[in-house]
Length: 130
Image (cartoon, rainbow, N blue to C red; front, side):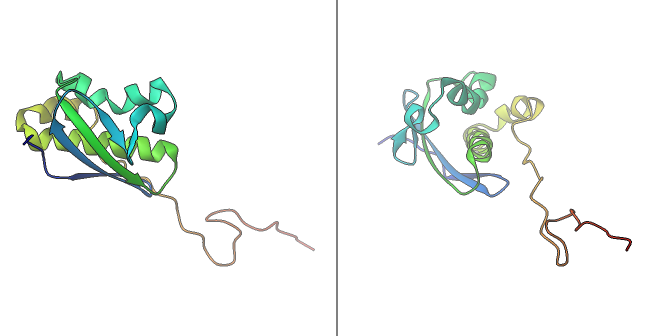
């Protein structure tokens, strides 16, 4: 049986990615599809694989990802954070290099809520003096 890490969670805006790394040869599966079928572009695949490139662990783990919520960009960033957290679960000495590259920080920016009496969060209705 292949050794696997616990499922780690990565979040960005309202996107949530659950990531599990299994010792293997670098196969990435997102929501039951191959990564390139889900992401559509090679550059997006390279983007989510950056934590492996920084730590020098390309091709040593199969990645199983379940992602939902948010938009496309938010999902990509959530996946990247989940992969980085999984790598730290495997080996704690990878954490400084991942932190230096900015993969360990959860982006806290969220959409501001809409307020009553306004059309959006900060936008106001047109002011009429008379």
